[in-house]
Length: 127
Image 1 (cartoon, rainbow, N blue to C red):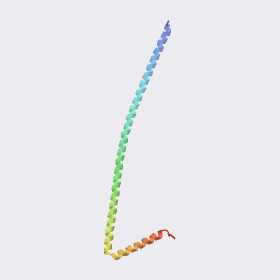
Image 2: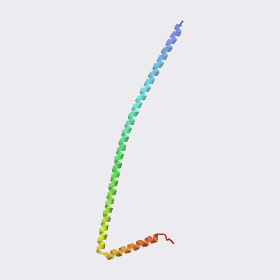
Image 3: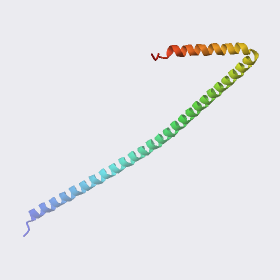
Image 4: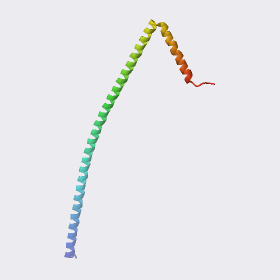
């Protein structure tokens, strides 16, 4: 036989257990929704950062390409100027030599002798 008092305690205990389970499920659901919302926000922020990083990399790449092209143009211009200067010097030397062959020969001989003396003085002796 069932006692009405114990039956009332059992029903009350069952009702409390049901309420507790409902509260736990509700709390779990809220925690899941909060975690999902936080994940969505984080994912959105990561997409923004990834997009900004891609833009920065492309911009830097263009700047590096531009700087390297400017450097190549400057080197090409300097090489062209050096070629022109050498060509002008060669034409000038040929013209001077044709106009003053004896002086040119004397200058060449003196330069050769001076260069030979410098090499001889700077090289170690083999004694």
